[in-house]
Length: 139
Image (cartoon, rainbow, N blue to C red; front, side):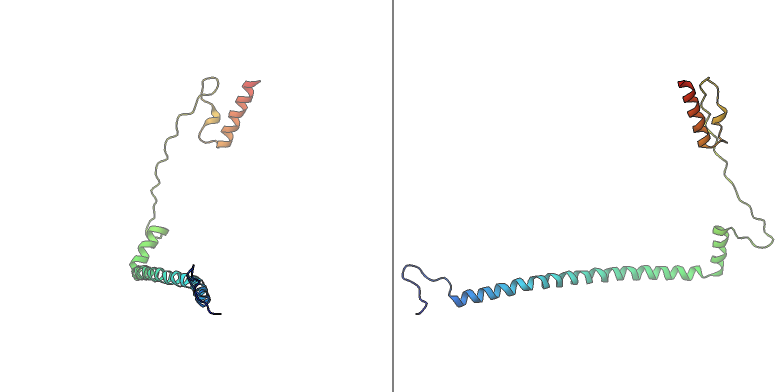
């Protein structure tokens, strides 16, 4: 029994060709994930190399700053500015900004300024006094 085409219909693929096609398709599908993983890892390596170059530039900049910060004059300048250090015999002073003026106190229920709304009292005391006035006027 030979595999020949029947007179009415030509044979498209033989049994060996079908098996070979299935094997090739299986090999192709089995190689897709490793190839995708290979390209993903390769792209990650490229991005990490770029990040390494950027960090090398930052590290070199920080090294330059470190050299400048080790100078005794720079240490003294920063101690004076940031920590308020003074040399023996010097008189330290601090300029304190003026406190902003308090806004005018709102008038009470009787039309006069309430003593409870003075700026020296806490917010909670002023709030409590306002609640007492509201409850007192409701009764």
